[in-house]
Amino acid sequence: MKTIENLKWRYAVKKFNTEKVSTADLNEILEATNLSASSTGIQPYRVFVVENTSLRQKLGEGSFNAQIAESSHLLVFAAFDKLTQEHIDAFIAHLARERNLPEEALADYKAALVGGLLSRADEENFNWSARQAYIALGTALVAAAELKIDSTPMEGFDSEKFDSLLGLKEKGLKSVVTLALGYRDAVNDAYAAVKKVRLPIEEFATFVV
Image (cartoon, rainbow, N blue to C red; front, side, top):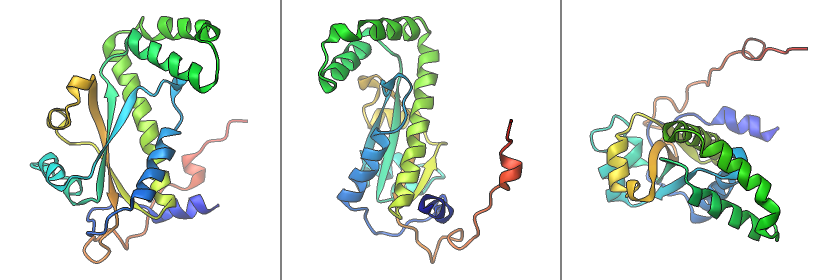
């Protein structure tokens, strides 16, 4: 299984070189991320691709994550700060168009979404949306590894600054996690040649039969 070998190859890069990720490869990663598993299919998050060098430098100022500025591209995963009737209406309309169905055929599904999502507090829905974004992050990590593109998932950034510089608040979004993409500087990254260590499968996984 080539995926296993690619995942053994990947690690959280500490230092990137100056090589840029091609548009074709970047689009493939984004397509894979867009196809990621999503509860109810509503995808309550968005991905912002930051290529602009000066903007990445501003985003990275004061952070211990130098990869924000040094990477080829920075993906910012931003979750809905709340879920609204408008979100559900737009999702159902899109679903109906894509499946060539009248919206009326999805009435029961729409009612279930309204009852299940809009009955919860905004904070609960935001936390749920953030978890959906993390699922997509995992897909992006695997997709990048398949293309032999290095990556570094990162928390620990100034989310208020990110939200301000990217104009997320006006879009009803909050940044939750980032992913730097690029190519490792194998000479200057001390972790590039270090063996990847994970638990033995028999310790990691428990079979319940």
